Amino acid sequence: MEYVELVSKCIFFYLIIIISLRVMGKREVGELSVLDIVIYFVMSEVYALSISEPDQSIWKALIAILTLTVLQIIIAWACLKKKKWRDFFEGKPSLIIYNGMIDQMEMKKQRYTIDDLMYQLRDKDVSTPEEVQFAILENSGTLTILKKDASKLKWKDPLISDGIVQKQVLEAIGKDEAWLREQLETEGVADPSEVFLCLWQKNGFFVLKKTTQNPAQMQHGRHEHAAD
Image (cartoon, rainbow, N blue to C red):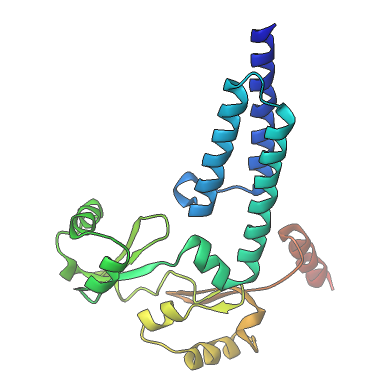
């Protein structure tokens, strides 16, 4: 009977955790935030305790997992609404190299050693920081590099993300918000808050306005407009 209960608990909590992770949203392992990792660790601990302790109430563990799921959803919603919450829980990318020069203070702030930097540069087939125009330490810990010989290409990080101007990106490319607004006006956009995503590409700007329609509805609307 004890083994049957153990197997039943394993199956039950396996399904509960799978459902909880699905509800919390999709995220690649390399893109997990500190909050995600903490939630997953605590869930794992609750799961382990409920399995290893026969007297542990299954409902207490279920309440704990549901509480963690709701907490993660609330914080994720807050991060979507406010950039300051997103920066607090998920962090911000850091500019480590600019025009071949290493920002040592930023490296100290991020506890990022020169050995870490050189390893990731070698991994990108870069032998020296002098070859690099920009190097960004992402939230996931990976290093995004733009070489000097490729610096004539446009910047790949978004200039606007969910209506918020990415001032750090503008500073990195030597531009300001006034310049960005001028470019948006040529695209028929009055204010950055109207933009869901703005990229600076080689062939011009890619601007995606905010909308409540899904891609299928947008495509259908285009067909109707073409028919008219």
